[in-house]
Amino acid sequence: MTPNAAPPATMPTTRGSTGAEPPTVKILIAGIGNVFLGDDGFGVEVAARLSVRPLPGDVRVVDFGIRGLDLVYALLENYDAVIFVDTAPRGERPGTLSVIETRLSSESQVTIDAHGMDPVKVLALARELGAMPCPTYVVGCEPLVILSGEEDEDVVVGLSGPVQGAVGEAVNMVESLVVQLCTTSNREDEGEIRRAIADGAAATGTPTDDGVHALGRV
Image (tube, rainbow, N blue to C red; front, side, top):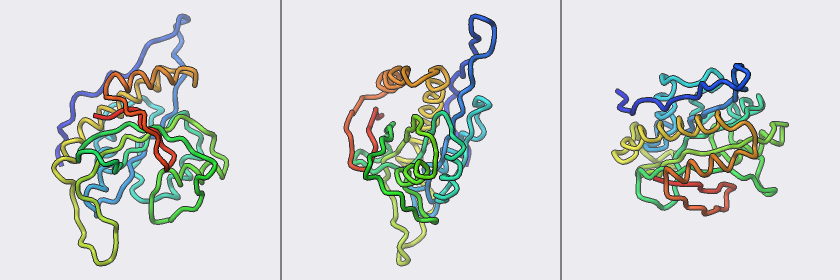
């Protein structure tokens, strides 16, 4: 399908006072979802659009689909930051976008379905296998049509109207988050990321039971 996204966010190119390039930030953008289960294909569609947009050289965009173990192995490469793009049922209006920060608890399960995808379980298993902790965010979209994958359900290919309409804004949100991550050099600067997200969306600040914390929504 033909993308209708806005022009890409301007990526940082500022040199330091010595004239040298600033330290690069290694970021993984992971599109998550099943394109045969309606709006669950949201993350895959956003990743497809981001894959043809200009991003810094150390930013990697991958459509992981439902390949949870592949994502676990990718996380073992120890990125400086990770951005998941996925559906996020939170009781909001369909098409509502949220930026969510993951916060693993000691009770987070480390089991994983090789043919399924749960970002919190993926993170927990990656940490168990030795992946270093790093700032991790989810750009999520409230679905309208999402199926469970049961055998008696019909296959639904394609996004609903509200979710399709949110794809372009999600691309912009991911690019803006990448800009913030690329211009903050250490964990002490994470507050700047939080403030930038809050400036662009109404902050929810509501923790959930599955290891995530909402930073903002639009």
